[in-house]
Image (cartoon, rainbow, N blue to C red; front, side):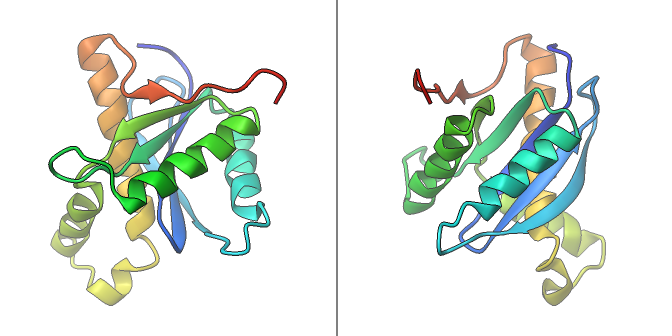
Length: 156
């Protein structure tokens, strides 16, 4: 298992859920929900990068929302584009399969007694926790980093 804290990122059209794990990469916990900026001013990217610096993250684990059959969707292109922007800003980024993370988060919150209305502000953080926890558990079990890295172009 590679040492170091990581951030988990659940990219949505309106919000970005952020989670983190400890430097030993054992447990993921929620951090924050970042507003997604439609005007593309970069403040959402800046906030995620600020959180990465604050938690001394060695890597950003971004959920890759594929369809149940494993095919790309409109959300896939959006999440990959966001991950590429993070990588272009110099952050080490890894894309991991996140199928069913939001559904799992909704079920967990419902089981905890949270109504759909009360879930809205925290669902993205809960999904980010699931994405990150799955990634660190998979790496611990296999000894191999999950998903794929987003390459950074030379000179960026």
